[in-house]
Image (cartoon, rainbow, N blue to C red):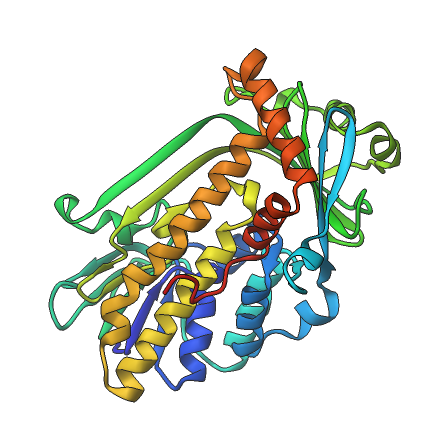
Length: 395
């Protein structure tokens, strides 16, 4: 087979890129090592910046996020048993975020791709990429034990942190930056109404961080900070709900509606960036190039902005016959990546219990939270980063 752009990975970044390229008249094939059901079964983030929502509309898949997504105008910070709202919309001149699960984003993109008759190869084994430093890259894989090969003009590595694309880059051509945090998040998904339908709730507590989020008005996603060596089996549903209540202010804790978990998992937290994000005719996007701790809700949104930059660059190449966008892709994407990394690291550092948080560290956290909720300038800084900086910020 032959195509213009081979996209490795059928997560939201790969699917969104494929849809945007299709809209621009650029042929593409997606190769995914997992099955469609496995891809849809991944439980991930659910807070979309306006830039991401706009991209879904641009890709022609914005109908459900517009009708079923829940718009948030504020966030709430809890510390010292008191809740403090941050008016995100008022502080940013009208910007909002939208609660809409990543699973639903993936579903919308998969259905649009299938409806357009575009080629997606699922359950592809032993995927490998070749000759991306030359003019004729190829992708090799196996389906039903049969060897297959795709020749293409470009390869887009949208295959996640553990994917083959970044791993195929020569070690002396890439530099990796990483920070691993000394705790994890225990997350529970439950079909219960969210404790707050209009805001994400962040709690700083002596027992550890907690977060109250939502996927819809009937499905909630809650988290508590936990030790990295904890096991999911150690946490019954009852223990989780009891711990969550302890970390919230009393009024909100009294309003928590509990129910059986439909998914429960522990995720480690890390910050990670690989530079550059382009190697000849190979481009990295999304988790293949960077990971952020989920505290700032930036993972999916960063992947979407990567895809926007890359789709524009490839469109310029094929339609306008200029490679300026391709040549600038890595620099432009990384500038936005590092701003989101900084914000996610800062919010994580502010809200979590670290081994050295006791004493001086805790007092500094409380002083910064006090300043944050009482200073309009500090609140605006939080708000404008939370809703997402403009794509052309600083460029």
